[in-house]
Length: 206
Image 1 (tube, rainbow, N blue to C red):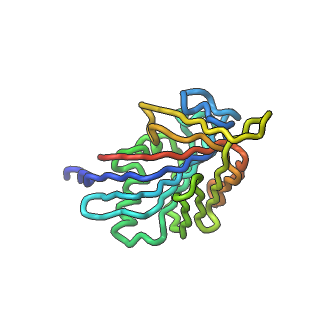
Image 2: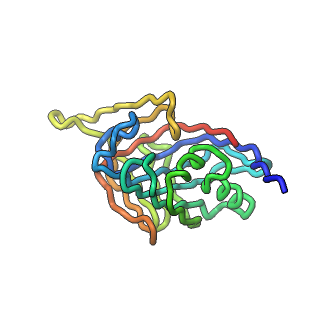
Image 3: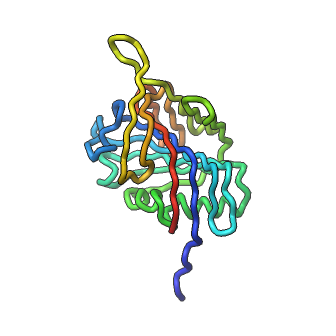
């Protein structure tokens, strides 16, 4: 029997990035993780999206991971989160995407995991209308961003990164995390005070 081809899909919105690296994250430019390993992930707020006839507008999803070294070296353990407001057709569509079965960044990341757990359906609170996004997902995730400050003057600075070949985001504001905590049976850490970023994303597939 021929394999079923995944439905065409698209989504765009804002992605919030956080990990255990120093400000700026050397992984953005193919450097090694600041501490030698990568612990972090992404929350995507889908402003507009669809898989086939299933609309995904307004939903949130997350992928949080623990790799023993750099991401591309594999052997990662990950868990994924889906907005509990999604109905069953939306949940099914998002599972296909987050499990890496329809391309996009998740298809690449899936190759780096030895374990992928989920879905975990959670109540999201995402504030993307302020200057700095904030994400809460029940007791599973808390991300609260803050501006980086000049260590001499104390003034806030506003660096950005442009990544024409970027997998997750092409341009992002670089910030820090006032709070970054993940609590799950399989992936759990607190990397508050480390790297954060946010920016616009737009993906198409498969």
